Length: 377
Image (cartoon, rainbow, N blue to C red):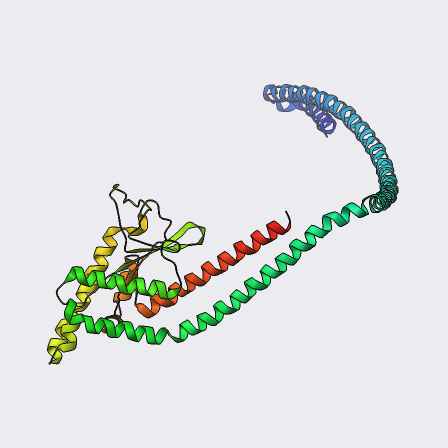
């Protein structure tokens, strides 16, 4: 296109020159502007020719670079094809080697198994021939121990059957026991009225009677006043909970007896409903005060005890327990929020019998393990 423009400029210049000279004499036209335009067009022509030359040079360079890139691309494609061929060859070799290794592993495994069976057969035969008499000498004492083990197991099973039968009889007598304790409590109410120390001692007597009735043994499965345990509070002061029940794995349950007889006796003896309600409210307040007092002792945090996060508050009279629970259905939750569980003779006895049963199972398991250990000695 640049050549076309340049040609057009040249032709235009010639035509203009001829026209100017042809009419110079006739028209006496001033040609100076035309000459300037011709000069300008000539300069433009020179500039366009220089630009055209530069573009042709760039075109040649770009063509050479394009040819080089095409050659490089061809080389890369050829190299990629060679790599793909090599990879395919390597994969085929790898698959072949994998199959060969699997075949070798199978051969080695079969050979090792045959060799092991052969050695085992030879050793077994040799052991049988050489040690038959020695084996009899070893087995005879073991047979005696097994027989002794079977005898002890049978004795243990018989004890279990007797224990279960005894447990049924004890459960059957639970109602009578509760009634008797309730009667005893009512009979002693008037005599103990106003004597808080005597009331406390009497509550502990009732509690220990229940412990004995449950089958737990003093000094073994439970302790009174934490005797011999050296219990201390976080401040280092000696502490003596009423009763500490021992559990397997060195765990403990604390029971504290609380007696509220005065308001209960007055409530029962009230002649009017107003009086009865007043003493009933006083009884509830008394129980809550005992809950607060027990909570402050923090028995469950005593050093030397591995206790659950709660303490049992024992009310020795079923009537008191029933009246309090019926009158205020929030008192149980009130105590529980302070890490205290309220129990009566019947509920406590059921809990203690469960603990006694756990101890029997624990002891039987230890005996069985000891018998098994001796049998394998």
